[in-house]
Length: 291
Ligand code: UTP
Image (cartoon, rainbow, N blue to C red; front, side, top):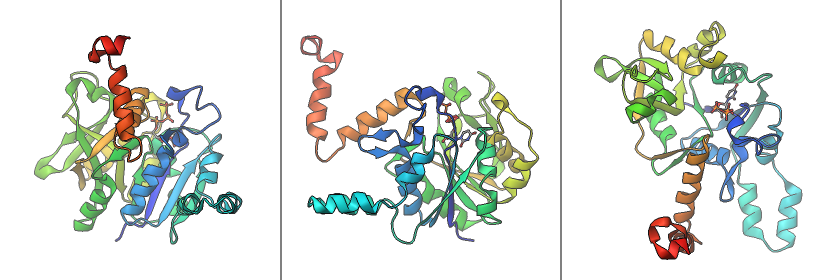
Protein backbone atom coordinates (compact mmCIF):
# COMPACT_ATOMS: atom_id res chain seq x y z
CA UNK A 1 0.00 0.00 0.00
CA UNK A 2 1.30 3.44 -0.94
CA UNK A 3 2.10 5.97 1.81
CA UNK A 4 -0.27 8.88 1.10
CA UNK A 5 -0.54 10.54 4.50
CA UNK A 6 1.93 12.22 6.83
CA UNK A 7 1.28 13.23 10.43
CA UNK A 8 3.03 16.29 11.87
CA UNK A 9 2.73 16.34 15.67
CA UNK A 10 3.07 20.05 16.52
CA UNK A 11 1.25 20.28 19.83
CA UNK A 12 4.27 20.19 22.18
CA UNK A 13 4.86 23.03 24.62
CA UNK A 14 8.28 24.00 23.25
CA UNK A 15 9.57 24.85 26.71
CA UNK A 16 13.23 24.89 25.65
CA UNK A 17 12.55 27.96 23.51
CA UNK A 18 10.67 30.06 26.05
CA UNK A 19 9.95 32.93 26.04
CA UNK A 20 9.86 32.84 22.20
CA UNK A 21 7.34 30.00 22.28
CA UNK A 22 4.99 31.40 24.91
CA UNK A 23 2.50 32.54 22.28
CA UNK A 24 4.25 31.45 19.06
CA UNK A 25 4.59 27.84 17.88
CA UNK A 26 8.13 26.47 18.08
CA UNK A 27 7.48 24.92 14.67
CA UNK A 28 7.31 28.39 13.11
CA UNK A 29 10.80 29.38 14.26
CA UNK A 30 12.56 30.27 11.01
CA UNK A 31 15.83 29.16 9.55
CA UNK A 32 16.60 32.46 7.83
CA UNK A 33 13.17 33.02 6.24
CA UNK A 34 11.46 29.63 6.24
CA UNK A 35 9.76 28.09 9.30
CA UNK A 36 11.14 24.70 10.38
CA UNK A 37 7.74 23.02 9.83
CA UNK A 38 7.83 24.05 6.17
CA UNK A 39 11.07 22.12 5.63
CA UNK A 40 9.33 18.99 6.97
CA UNK A 41 6.25 19.60 4.81
CA UNK A 42 8.41 20.01 1.69
CA UNK A 43 10.23 16.78 2.57
CA UNK A 44 6.92 14.88 2.87
CA UNK A 45 5.64 16.25 -0.44
CA UNK A 46 8.95 15.35 -2.13
CA UNK A 47 8.37 11.77 -0.90
CA UNK A 48 5.02 11.60 -2.74
CA UNK A 49 2.75 12.31 0.23
CA UNK A 50 -0.47 14.15 -0.61
CA UNK A 51 -2.35 14.43 2.71
CA UNK A 52 -0.76 16.45 5.51
CA UNK A 53 -2.26 15.90 8.95
CA UNK A 54 -1.21 18.45 11.60
CA UNK A 55 -1.86 17.64 15.24
CA UNK A 56 -1.92 21.07 16.87
CA UNK A 57 -2.73 22.52 20.26
CA UNK A 58 -3.30 25.84 21.99
CA UNK A 59 -1.01 28.65 20.76
CA UNK A 60 -0.51 26.75 17.48
CA UNK A 61 -3.15 28.42 15.33
CA UNK A 62 -0.51 30.33 13.39
CA UNK A 63 0.58 27.00 11.85
CA UNK A 64 -2.89 26.65 10.32
CA UNK A 65 -2.64 30.22 8.98
CA UNK A 66 0.79 29.51 7.52
CA UNK A 67 -0.52 26.62 5.42
CA UNK A 68 -3.79 28.36 4.48
CA UNK A 69 -4.24 30.46 1.34
CA UNK A 70 -3.80 34.23 1.79
CA UNK A 71 -5.35 35.89 -1.29
CA UNK A 72 -5.15 39.39 0.25
CA UNK A 73 -1.40 39.10 0.78
CA UNK A 74 -0.92 37.66 -2.72
CA UNK A 75 -2.96 40.52 -4.23
CA UNK A 76 -0.99 43.13 -2.29
CA UNK A 77 2.29 41.59 -3.48
CA UNK A 78 1.13 41.47 -7.10
CA UNK A 79 -0.06 45.11 -6.89
CA UNK A 80 3.49 46.01 -5.87
CA UNK A 81 4.92 44.04 -8.81
CA UNK A 82 6.30 41.33 -6.53
CA UNK A 83 4.84 38.49 -8.57
CA UNK A 84 7.60 36.02 -7.75
CA UNK A 85 7.07 36.48 -4.00
CA UNK A 86 3.29 36.15 -4.48
CA UNK A 87 3.89 32.91 -6.39
CA UNK A 88 6.20 31.59 -3.68
CA UNK A 89 3.51 32.31 -1.04
CA UNK A 90 0.81 30.65 -3.17
CA UNK A 91 2.90 27.49 -3.59
CA UNK A 92 3.60 26.91 0.11
CA UNK A 93 0.94 24.23 -0.29
CA UNK A 94 1.13 23.06 -3.92
CA UNK A 95 -1.95 22.01 -5.89
CA UNK A 96 -3.14 18.48 -5.15
CA UNK A 97 -1.96 18.59 -1.52
CA UNK A 98 -4.56 18.57 1.28
CA UNK A 99 -3.95 19.92 4.80
CA UNK A 100 -6.00 18.65 7.75
CA UNK A 101 -5.75 20.13 11.24
CA UNK A 102 -6.62 18.26 14.43
CA UNK A 103 -6.21 19.24 18.07
CA UNK A 104 -4.39 17.37 20.80
CA UNK A 105 -6.39 18.64 23.79
CA UNK A 106 -3.45 18.29 26.19
CA UNK A 107 0.28 17.74 25.56
CA UNK A 108 0.33 14.17 26.89
CA UNK A 109 3.28 13.07 24.80
CA UNK A 110 4.33 12.36 21.22
CA UNK A 111 2.64 8.94 21.21
CA UNK A 112 -0.62 10.54 22.32
CA UNK A 113 -0.30 13.20 19.60
CA UNK A 114 0.10 10.48 16.95
CA UNK A 115 -2.94 8.65 18.38
CA UNK A 116 -4.98 11.86 17.95
CA UNK A 117 -4.53 11.44 14.16
CA UNK A 118 -6.14 7.99 14.10
CA UNK A 119 -9.57 9.09 12.85
CA UNK A 120 -8.02 10.85 9.84
CA UNK A 121 -5.31 8.29 9.04
CA UNK A 122 -7.63 5.26 9.26
CA UNK A 123 -6.29 1.78 8.58
CA UNK A 124 -3.41 2.60 6.28
CA UNK A 125 0.35 3.07 6.71
CA UNK A 126 1.50 6.65 7.23
CA UNK A 127 4.60 8.75 7.77
CA UNK A 128 5.35 10.84 10.87
CA UNK A 129 7.67 13.86 10.68
CA UNK A 130 8.85 15.89 13.66
CA UNK A 131 9.53 19.46 12.58
CA UNK A 132 12.30 19.81 15.21
CA UNK A 133 14.52 17.60 13.08
CA UNK A 134 15.53 19.70 10.10
CA UNK A 135 17.23 17.76 7.32
CA UNK A 136 19.66 18.75 4.62
CA UNK A 137 20.98 16.77 1.65
CA UNK A 138 19.46 13.28 1.27
CA UNK A 139 15.99 13.52 2.83
CA UNK A 140 14.96 10.55 4.96
CA UNK A 141 11.19 10.41 4.33
CA UNK A 142 11.65 9.38 0.68
CA UNK A 143 14.09 6.67 1.83
CA UNK A 144 11.58 5.35 4.41
CA UNK A 145 8.76 5.32 1.85
CA UNK A 146 11.02 3.44 -0.61
CA UNK A 147 11.94 0.90 2.08
CA UNK A 148 8.25 0.38 2.91
CA UNK A 149 7.53 -0.17 -0.78
CA UNK A 150 10.05 -3.08 -0.77
CA UNK A 151 8.16 -4.79 2.08
CA UNK A 152 5.57 -3.46 4.53
CA UNK A 153 6.58 -2.87 8.15
CA UNK A 154 7.44 -0.16 10.64
CA UNK A 155 10.40 1.79 9.27
CA UNK A 156 12.61 4.03 11.40
CA UNK A 157 15.14 6.61 10.34
CA UNK A 158 18.30 6.15 12.43
CA UNK A 159 21.72 7.75 12.80
CA UNK A 160 24.82 6.83 14.73
CA UNK A 161 25.46 8.83 17.91
CA UNK A 162 28.33 8.89 20.42
CA UNK A 163 27.71 6.55 23.41
CA UNK A 164 27.59 9.51 25.82
CA UNK A 165 24.78 11.07 23.74
CA UNK A 166 22.61 7.92 23.62
CA UNK A 167 20.73 8.97 26.78
CA UNK A 168 19.07 11.76 24.77
CA UNK A 169 17.49 9.48 22.14
CA UNK A 170 15.34 6.45 21.52
CA UNK A 171 18.04 3.82 20.95
CA UNK A 172 17.67 0.75 18.74
CA UNK A 173 18.16 -2.72 20.19
CA UNK A 174 19.48 -4.57 17.14
CA UNK A 175 17.85 -7.88 16.21
CA UNK A 176 18.75 -10.65 13.75
CA UNK A 177 18.93 -9.99 9.99
CA UNK A 178 19.30 -6.24 10.47
CA UNK A 179 15.85 -5.93 12.06
CA UNK A 180 15.06 -3.74 15.06
CA UNK A 181 14.35 -5.93 18.11
CA UNK A 182 13.37 -3.01 20.34
CA UNK A 183 13.62 0.70 21.01
CA UNK A 184 14.79 1.99 24.39
CA UNK A 185 13.74 5.56 25.16
CA UNK A 186 16.57 7.62 26.69
CA UNK A 187 18.64 4.73 28.17
CA UNK A 188 20.65 5.35 31.33
CA UNK A 189 24.37 6.09 30.65
CA UNK A 190 26.21 2.85 29.92
CA UNK A 191 22.96 0.91 29.36
CA UNK A 192 22.48 1.78 25.69
CA UNK A 193 21.83 -1.32 23.54
CA UNK A 194 23.57 0.27 20.52
CA UNK A 195 24.64 3.66 19.20
CA UNK A 196 21.82 3.81 16.64
CA UNK A 197 19.41 6.60 17.53
CA UNK A 198 15.90 6.89 16.14
CA UNK A 199 15.32 10.39 14.76
CA UNK A 200 12.12 12.27 13.97
CA UNK A 201 11.04 10.42 10.82
CA UNK A 202 8.94 7.23 10.79
CA UNK A 203 6.71 5.10 8.62
CA UNK A 204 4.14 3.46 10.86
CA UNK A 205 1.36 0.94 10.36
CA UNK A 206 -2.16 1.45 11.74
CA UNK A 207 -1.62 -1.29 14.37
CA UNK A 208 0.47 1.33 16.24
CA UNK A 209 -2.82 3.04 17.19
CA UNK A 210 -4.07 -0.14 18.92
CA UNK A 211 -0.84 -0.23 20.97
CA UNK A 212 -0.92 3.50 21.81
CA UNK A 213 -4.56 3.37 22.93
CA UNK A 214 -3.75 0.82 25.62
CA UNK A 215 -0.32 2.18 26.58
CA UNK A 216 0.39 3.70 30.02
CA UNK A 217 2.57 6.84 30.34
CA UNK A 218 6.31 6.15 30.10
CA UNK A 219 9.43 8.31 30.41
CA UNK A 220 8.59 11.79 31.79
CA UNK A 221 4.98 10.73 32.45
CA UNK A 222 4.23 11.03 28.71
CA UNK A 223 2.70 8.56 26.26
CA UNK A 224 5.85 7.75 24.32
CA UNK A 225 5.87 6.81 20.65
CA UNK A 226 9.16 4.95 21.27
CA UNK A 227 7.42 2.62 23.76
CA UNK A 228 4.73 1.77 21.20
CA UNK A 229 7.39 1.09 18.54
CA UNK A 230 9.22 -1.07 21.08
CA UNK A 231 6.04 -3.14 21.61
CA UNK A 232 5.57 -3.42 17.86
CA UNK A 233 9.19 -4.59 17.49
CA UNK A 234 8.63 -7.55 19.81
CA UNK A 235 6.12 -8.79 17.21
CA UNK A 236 8.78 -8.31 14.49
CA UNK A 237 9.00 -6.41 11.24
CA UNK A 238 10.45 -3.14 12.47
CA UNK A 239 13.32 -2.04 10.26
CA UNK A 240 15.71 0.90 10.20
CA UNK A 241 17.17 3.00 7.40
CA UNK A 242 20.37 4.88 8.21
CA UNK A 243 20.28 8.59 7.51
CA UNK A 244 22.69 9.64 4.75
CA UNK A 245 21.97 13.39 4.86
CA UNK A 246 22.55 15.93 7.59
CA UNK A 247 20.19 16.33 10.57
CA UNK A 248 19.90 19.37 12.83
CA UNK A 249 18.18 19.05 16.20
CA UNK A 250 16.27 22.32 16.09
CA UNK A 251 14.47 21.40 19.33
CA UNK A 252 17.70 22.43 21.09
CA UNK A 253 19.16 25.92 20.95
CA UNK A 254 22.62 24.79 19.84
CA UNK A 255 21.22 22.56 17.07
CA UNK A 256 19.00 25.40 15.90
CA UNK A 257 21.96 27.80 15.79
CA UNK A 258 24.03 25.24 13.87
CA UNK A 259 21.23 24.89 11.31
CA UNK A 260 20.99 28.65 10.84
CA UNK A 261 24.76 28.97 10.36
CA UNK A 262 24.96 26.05 7.88
CA UNK A 263 21.94 27.16 5.86
CA UNK A 264 23.24 30.73 5.80
CA UNK A 265 26.72 29.62 4.65
CA UNK A 266 25.09 27.75 1.73
CA UNK A 267 22.71 30.58 0.87
CA UNK A 268 22.86 31.65 -2.80
CA UNK A 269 22.52 35.34 -2.06
CA UNK A 270 24.56 35.96 1.05
CA UNK A 271 26.55 32.74 1.69
CA UNK A 272 29.85 34.47 0.84
CA UNK A 273 29.35 37.67 2.84
CA UNK A 274 28.07 35.58 5.76
CA UNK A 275 31.19 33.36 5.65
CA UNK A 276 33.34 36.52 5.80
CA UNK A 277 31.28 37.82 8.71
CA UNK A 278 31.70 34.57 10.62
CA UNK A 279 35.45 34.49 9.91
CA UNK A 280 35.78 38.03 11.29
CA UNK A 281 33.98 37.05 14.49
CA UNK A 282 35.58 33.63 15.08
CA UNK A 283 38.00 33.67 18.05
CA UNK A 284 40.48 31.50 16.12
CA UNK A 285 40.94 34.30 13.63
CA UNK A 286 43.34 35.78 16.20
CA UNK A 287 43.83 39.50 16.80
CA UNK A 288 41.30 40.40 14.12
CA UNK A 289 38.61 38.28 15.85
CA UNK A 290 39.31 39.85 19.22
CA UNK A 291 39.36 43.41 17.96
P1 UTP B 1 9.50 17.52 22.01
O1 UTP B 1 9.42 16.99 23.38
O2 UTP B 1 10.82 17.64 21.37
O3 UTP B 1 8.82 18.95 21.88
O4 UTP B 1 8.52 16.70 21.08
P2 UTP B 1 8.24 19.92 22.94
O5 UTP B 1 7.61 19.20 24.08
O6 UTP B 1 7.37 20.85 22.17
O7 UTP B 1 9.54 20.74 23.35
P3 UTP B 1 10.26 21.03 24.74
O8 UTP B 1 11.00 19.76 25.08
O9 UTP B 1 9.20 21.41 25.74
O10 UTP B 1 11.16 22.17 24.41
C1 UTP B 1 8.81 16.34 19.72
C2 UTP B 1 7.65 16.71 18.81
O11 UTP B 1 6.44 16.14 19.28
C3 UTP B 1 5.44 17.11 19.42
C4 UTP B 1 6.18 18.45 19.55
O12 UTP B 1 5.38 19.52 19.06
C5 UTP B 1 7.42 18.23 18.72
O13 UTP B 1 7.20 18.56 17.35
N1 UTP B 1 4.61 16.81 20.61
C6 UTP B 1 5.19 16.51 21.79
C7 UTP B 1 3.24 16.86 20.49
O14 UTP B 1 2.68 17.14 19.41
N2 UTP B 1 2.48 16.59 21.60
C8 UTP B 1 3.04 16.27 22.79
O15 UTP B 1 2.28 16.04 23.75
C9 UTP B 1 4.44 16.25 22.89
